[in-house]
Image 1 (cartoon, rainbow, N blue to C red):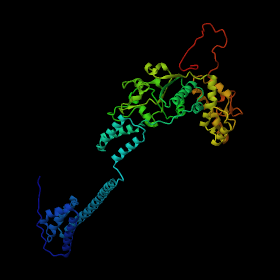
Image 2: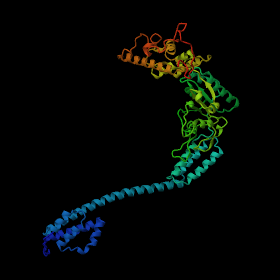
Image 3: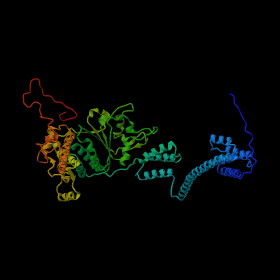
Image 4: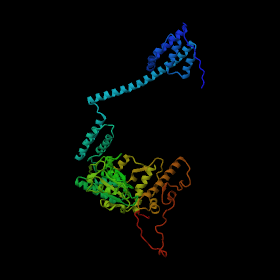
Length: 556
């Protein structure tokens, strides 16, 4: 590359122009101002101080431009190319002014950051001093001490904590006091103490030993089921004679819809106990019954310990639903795990894997439900008192529909409302001498804007039972009654508002009462047309009479 270079002659300034002198003084003043604001700029000035000549405008302009970090390369080159001393000083002064503005902005940002940090530090130090002062005065404890105090207060509320459990709790509290709150072991220990102290050790609910009151509660919600009711009344009578109540394991077996699950809650109310329900249908993990080991992440106790903590008592009624549908998998056999739970001779020292301490669940009343006893393992079935519910016959289903299902459905669909308490109290005072079984039907009146004739007659219920719902239970009967009451509610609202309905939904009869005559308008044609396939004897050739049995009952 051939380059032709021509040197400028040395630029010396010998004049005494006042403008140039003023520019020089301004540049020196700006350099001092920026040096006070920006420490880095001050270091550059100190480093190149030997190059500073206030009497030579060229060298002064070059020095000012060289120590500016805010200037672009084009601006610095423009200073070098300028031969006129006045213009050269002007360009250098512009660069210095930019440097001054950048330094001021930097200083403002720095002061804001320092202000925020100092404010946060100030608050932190004041809070720490406040904690120390309150701690010295006994007004406040730190978080760890507050947690430990909470556990001690919780334990003091229990009548009696077993000695073995108390030793474990004290050891865990000592361990908790030596752990850092941010450590993972602290959280594990605290969760363990939450469960140990959350179990209501030897807390018992006040039980009802009044057989009349218990019978009244049982009859209020369920019709029939005399075997179940008698078993509960026997249980109450034995407890009254002995002065203490032991647990019991009862298994209600029968087809769906016979009231197995719903009566368990009524039993708990009749006994004055708390109620807890969980289903084991399809359960294939033993840990759901006996808990997880504490070494696992997210470990927690099983359903039995959870039920005690949830109910807050040691003698609740625990319903184990669908016990005949237990699963089996690689995580163990839950049916075998239930052997310890449902064995009266073993459950006084039930051992949960998570708590790892014996828990007495012998005061618990266990109620199990099943559809088919054949699917329950033999050893498990031997530990339970089985009460078979074969289903309801025709008169019982009609009575259940009339006294329970119809009032319940009409209330849920807004056709009936509960009577006021005053009126109920007056009726009770008038009929003191008579002892009647209270049923839901007597507790309701028609809602506002609902005609007083709205209802379902007895012959309609009989037709529903005979021609539509022949199963052993009353679940399908309840569905048909719900269908009727929903359509009645639609017709009542439509007539009140003057709205038009479809031909299928509109009311065809003049009366609001659903009877056998207009039943098909609400639920359609009969599903069963006859009780017998062949009405006339003798039977046709090749046909024989047989008898079939299924666990579903009815006409299945």
